[in-house]
Structure formats: structure tokens, C-alpha cells
Amino acid sequence: MNRIRRVLGRSSSSTHRLGALCLLLALGGCNEKGEPVAAAAPVVEVTTVSVQAVREWDLFNGRISAIDAVDLRPRVSGYVDRVAFREGDEVEKGQTLFVIDPRPYREALASAQARLARARATVRLATEQDRRGQALVRQSALSREEGDIRSASLAQGVADVNAAVAEVATAQLNLDFTQVRAPFSGRVGRAMLTLGNLAQADQSILTSIVSQDPMYVYFDADEQSLLRYTELMGKGQRPGVSNTVRVGLANDVGTFPLTGTVDFLDNQVDPATGTIRVRAVLPNPERRLTAGLFARVRLEGGSETRAVLIDDRAVQTDQDRKYVYVIGPQNQALRKDVTLGRQLDGLRVISAGLAAGDRVVLNGAQKIFYPGMAVEPKEISAPTQQASTAAPQTPLAK
Image (cartoon, rainbow, N blue to C red):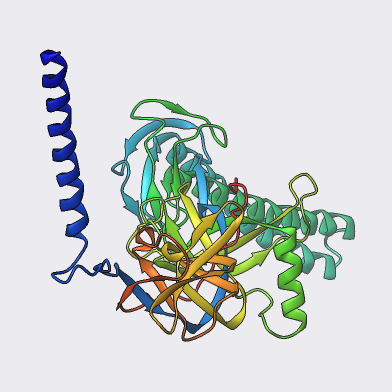
């Protein structure tokens, strides 16, 4: 019996301690007068919605290409006598790159010049004989037939001179062709044939050259974009070809620092891909562009419009719905469903649901537990946009 009393005593003591703890917790939510104290409203960062001018841009994938590119081949056969450039350097138009052994071609030129000299000597003799023959024919001292033979010999000699002149010119060309020169300015590749190797005329590749400035960027526009552009051109809201493009390379994350102009639109849509090839010209004075590089191309998609833009971080998701919190007149966080437009450099075009002057919660939405909750708004400056929107990307241009 005494044991039971001791157990009950300990249980009663524990119950009193638990009650005291609950009382202390309850008093913690009260002021000195015992009245409940309201929790402080959470601080949230808000921005004021504004309507901004937006020019739509469509985004495509493309490839950089050289305007001029050539695999350099010799025009005459022979052994490589000299490689006159450093691989990978930029060369100027007309600069000597390779020298084919010129000795056989010098001899061929000398032989052609000798034949020309002989033909000219023959013409001089035939001219004198024809002159005397015509005088004798007039004096009836020589038959007319013999006079005609002498005139024909002179004409044949003149023809031989003309042929010899052409042979000399050909031999001179062949000798000149032993100096393999750059057909245009650009960057030269590696030497495919080196000293002592045999180069076959019009067959052997000696090296390659690609031009550097300006450059092309090729990309494929989808047919929906093409139809939209055509409609805008019909309304006079878009030029026919000379549209501005912005170009960014793989390391230009989120930026398009290069500017160019469309100069070519293909004459048909590829039925296999539903795209049409477009080309733009880009200046390349700093040599940032190299043939074959991947590029992202922004092409002006339409005329300038006015749109509501907010930071994309303000947009919340509730299953298949998008919404934002706006600050009400009593500093309450009110939910507003919105219709999203295109994304733009971290900003979002809002097609419906917001108006200019609305204050949108940008940071701190996780502190809002239910619509209508009281908050303490802290105004911050709204980010601005760079006047461009992006359409879905097309397949990589080849």
C-alpha cells in the first residue's frame, strides 16, 4: 500500500510540473495585462508593375561561315620548291604561299620565245619576197601564180608569229603559276604538301584559306515565322531583307553582343524540315568569329509594342495555374492569377491579370501562408528589359 502511495505521489508531481510548463508557454503569448500579442507581419520585397516598350525578337540556332573559302590547288605540276608562309597566319591577297620548281617552265618559256623569233624572221623574209614578187608581176616578169604563192607564204608566216606569241604567253603563265598565291585575304590552314613533294596540277590540295572579315551566319527559320514576317512586310511594318540580327556565341551567356544584317533569304522552304535558310552578314574586325562556330541568332520578330513586364521570380505555380501576390490597400498579400507571355532576359510578359501600378511580391512569397495575409512591403526598384523576346529555338543550322 505504501508503494502505491509513493507512485501516485510521483505521478501527481509530474502532472503539476507539466501544467506549470503549459502555463508558462501560454503566458509567453500575452502581454503584461494578459492580452494576446499579434505576430509581426513578415517583410516582403515588392516592385511596382509598369508598362514598357517591347520589341519582339525570335531566337534561332545557326553556324558561322566564311564568305570566301578555298582549297588551294596548283595550276601546274611540279615539285614543291618552297613553302612561303607560316601555318595559321593571316595572309594578304596575292601573297606567295608555295613555289613550284620553276626551272622546267623557264626552259619552256625560252623555247617558246625562240620559236617566236624564228617565226618573225620568216615573216620578214616572206614580206620582202612578196614585195619583190608583186613588182615583178606588174612588170610581167613573174607569173601571177608565183606572186600568189609568195603572198600566201607571207600570210602563213604572220599566222605562225601569232601562234608563237600565244605559246610565249602560255609559257609565261605557266611560269607565273609556279608561284602559288593567295586568291583573297584570309587565314591560311596547314600545309598539306611540304618541300620536295610532287604537286599535281588541279588535283593536289596545298592548303586552305578562309576569309575573316566580314563573316556569314546561316540559320533556318521555321515556316510560321516566315509567314508572320511576310504578313508584316505586306503591312509595311518590316523591311524585305535588310533586318537587323543580334548574335551571341557559346560563351556569350544570355547576351548577344554582335550585330549584323540579313542579306539573303532562300527561294524555297525545305519540305523535309519546314524551314527556310537565312543568311546574315557580321563584321569581324576583332576576329571573334571563326568559320564553323555555333551561334545564337536573334531576329526582329515584329514591331514595337507596349507590354506589362515583371521579374520572372515573382511568378508562382499552383498545379496548372500561374499567379502572383500583389499588395492590397491594407498591406495584404492578394493572389492574382496571370496569363504568361514570352520570357525576356529574366522578365516575363504578362498577357492578362496585371495592370500598371500593381505592386507585386518579388522576394518573400514563401512567407505568405494564405491569400489575404498581412505583410510588410519593402519597395525595391524594378528590373528593366533589353527590348527583346525570344521564340522557341529552331533546329541547328547545318
